[in-house]
Length: 177
Image (cartoon, rainbow, N blue to C red):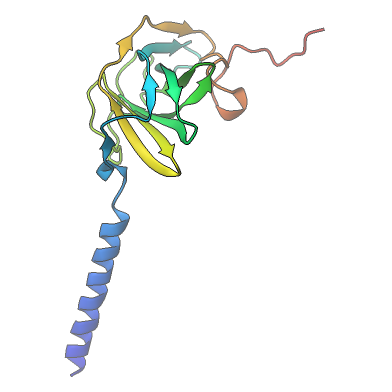
């Protein structure tokens, strides 16, 4: 009888752990991509950037012009070339600065992390947004590459706010007299 109780408890615990593992293992990779976005997108451009040798970083700038956007939609994330970034609204477009994970000075595409949610081609991206509080994703199938840019001291604060990044910027900390 004791053996039967132990086996029963062991099987119950195993089933509970397996169920917990399955539920916790779900991520946005199972999320459905929307067939149509609730906003109108213009031609998306991206460019590789290189920081000075002392900074030793590379990355991508992404520029997404939004022609129309519903007030119930908040555009906030981008997934591109195995990198994830925050989209910031700058005038009539959204801008993202993606820092490459490679430690080399030359630009090399980042390896795909195990938990990266999407498998997309190099000329595609996924835009993450909230619509009425619900997380949704839209895949863009064509992006235009523009010429690379070199930032001696890291990307300028036009794209990044100095207080939110460890990267150097071109702004002076001194006050003008």
